[in-house]
Length: 140
Image 1 (cartoon, rainbow, N blue to C red):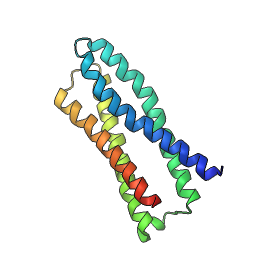
Image 2: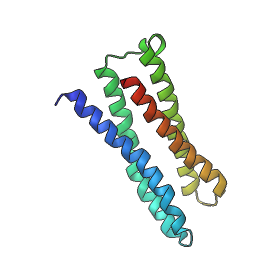
Image 3: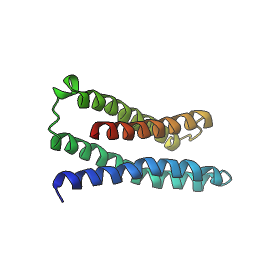
């Protein structure tokens, strides 16, 4: 197996954790509505795993660019570069929304609006799914 294939597999596995984990936690946390401390503990524990996966995604994404010989100039002048530009934006939106959501959940007051929390979590997940779809478009 080539280094590119290994890098790509690790990238896909990290995406599974980032995307699948968000979807799983979003599905399960309402069941802990009556146990807010338990829900908070689950969220904090998931954050450790999720942010590790996000970091791996960034590193392996850079690796994928290098293996595909995509440079900075390609971001402006090629089909793959344009798709990658959109993917970068979606990755930033996903990470930014997740980070803001995490900050709200771990603040000293921990009284974020449920609506804002839901919007941020949903935005992080939707942007991550869209980024994954752009990854498929780049590869095809």
